[in-house]
Length: 374
Ligand SMILES: [Zn+2]
Image (cartoon, rainbow, N blue to C red; front, side, top):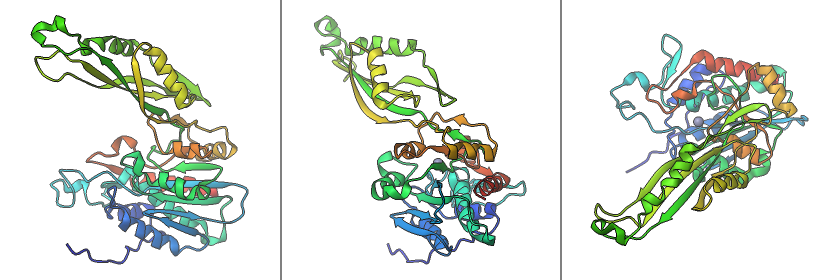
């Protein structure tokens, strides 16, 4: 197969931000295939004065250096989940792909809400920072990254933290993930465990010769089923926790008493706890069982007490809400940067075949951020 070298797509950052969103949707950037979009973003940013650029793989950091007392970070991922199976560019549901502003002011297409509307806002904001002579009141770092929609080890933001940590320092970070224009602060942490019970294999016709490891796991399930998850207030926001068995494995054949059973457990814990404290909580509940922690990601406190964060919330005039899922705000939180999600579009439409965003929601997000930075 011959892959033709093509020049990057030219993006007009000063057009209507809804049309810019459509232009971004039209560049396929399914995770692992972000280069074309990253090239277009880099080319567009290089035309702007006053930004220092670093390119790392398919991620880009662009920073102002105005010597302002505060620096804010605006971050977004370039990748999307795969195209709808029934749609796509060859598809049978053309209304969902490719993009276009429909008569009712709605943009359809993969990434419309998650999160090319947000990326368009970042780009339009970068272009408007130095327009008309009014420079922003804060220094700004724009971050565009790859591989958000896949395993965390591939995360472009994680790679930027490792390779360019000092360039990601700041007083406050906003991820432009879809929140319907509200502010979502912090996020729950997540942790996985395996609880294993052992028995003794035997022919099931002579079960008394063995011992059943699946039956031995019943008390684990009973304790989990009886557990009442907590709701915990952190910095004024309420975080609902969840603790669940999410998978169970055991048994080898239809006539063998199982000698091993593994219950996989997922704990979504409020950001008042460190992963070690969360682990201790689960171990106490499952005392007496062989429990191994297999995976953990810390949560993030909402950080809304920080002056930069509270001035942002006041400027956009939105009531902050907690975020239950784990998000990249936690990566900024680990760097000591309070972070929130704030972006156009409905998160419930993310990854759906009818993914769409209202053109006016993208414009409103841009206006709110311009007002805050002015
Ligand atoms: Zn996203």
